[in-house]
Amino acid sequence: MTEPLLLVRDIAKSFPGVRALDGVSFTLERGEIRTLAGENGAGKSTLLSILGGALRPDRGSIYIDGVRRMEYTSRRALAEGVRIAQQEPAIVPQLTVVQNLLLGIGRRQRATAAADIEQALKDVAQMGFPMAARTPVSRLSPAQRHALTIARAFAFGAKIVALDEPTTSMLEHNVAEVLARVREIAHGRGVGVIYVSHKMPEVMSVSDTVVVLRDGKPAFDRPISDTSSEEIVRRMVGRELLSFERRHPVQDSAPVHFEATGVTHPTGVGPLSISVRAGEVVGIAGLVGSGRTEFLRALIRADEGTRSTVSIDGKKVRIRSPRDSRSAGIAFIPEDRKAQGLVLQTPAYANVALTADHQLNAFGPFISRAKQIATAKAMGERMSLRPANVRLNARQFSGGNQQKIVIAKWIWLGASVYLFDEPTKGVDVGGKVEIYELIDQLASEGNAVIVVSSDLPEIISVSDRVLVMKAGRFVSEHTGDQINEHSIVANAMGVATEADAVGAAKGTS
Image (cartoon, rainbow, N blue to C red; front, side, top):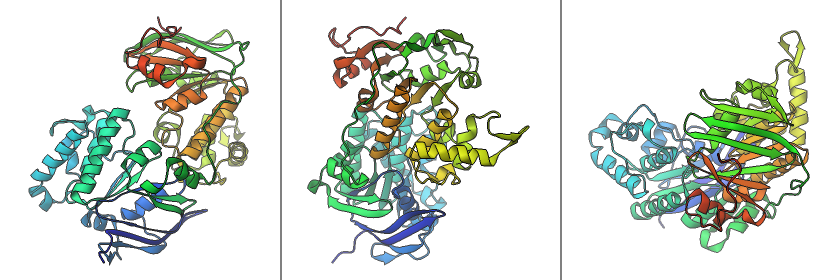
């Protein structure tokens, strides 16, 4: 009987206050694509770190080609042909494409690397992202960088490749090409692939088998042909997960709470205007590069050269910087929460206190840790933060719970305008619903909410009204039955019929 390419047996790993993995076992055959599914916090990232040699398990064994690996380090994992392609591409923008392909490759391998480089460039081209070897990576789009990361993972004798959310920042037609190429490589070269994604259509399309982790334990293991996306989700969250519907849609009589005119960004966005009623959620849809994020950043004057005139409850508010917008009660929840919304190496309670000036001081300029902890605990209880230990560093929380921390720092401050940029990026299906419910609750309290998202079902589910952006302008406005995927996509791509473009957006000027 042939030994499996990879055997993970009874892996366990704990951190202070958290049991990340507990008795995880599964196999991976040559040429097999196995999805590793689970909510944020289920232990997926910890398991990938162990497979890559970055972490040592407290218990358990790893077998490659039937041989138990005892002294298993990152260097040893690379030598065994194990490659971990993380969600955030591990590349150096200042280097060229070929220089990035060679990162981590030993001198001896470099001498004979020409064929591997040629194959990697061929792979990335067949994914729909052709690029020249000498192109600086700084010139590549986020989607191109993810494609390069995938191609590099399969190069230089890779036997086991883990892909963690590899299609982030890619459009739907790009994703199909990437997944098709991943299947061709895995099946054609006999590479074992561990695939991690929260996107169920991707999982069902690319996978041969699926193993589900829940609370660090294996909860489900099946061939993909013997299950469904609904079953996988149910096994992940331990309950049926129904589609989200707003419980508190905006009232027709609600007054305008937030208004901005003359909004411009030096990248070519605007001039635009927007008004949001108290209790209203306005979604902004559009293709990547349409200017959605730049529009939000212009509202809070985050970048030089931006312009906007802002009014709250009919009174003009002077916004010259993000500090001014914070003082005015405008909350900005950025797309990249790890780089722009959190200080990962500090406790959750300190992150909740980031919006404070002197409110949490003991006396004079001295910060009161007791006040910070008490405030964070109260916010954690309100938002069902898991784990509830606010003394843990922010990096120790899952993506969904990190997002709760980012939002919590604004809620306790008493913000009344919330700007969400991709609010559930990298968040599992259960965590998404929790954040949708939180957005609905914020709106029900009379706040004005703007949500930018590339996830169309998300925009459709949470919004009272949707504005579509294209090339820095609002091109259509959608309400009621007009909030549908066909109409939104048609307008975003500029192929809308007269019936699709129901009313040009009021923000267009």
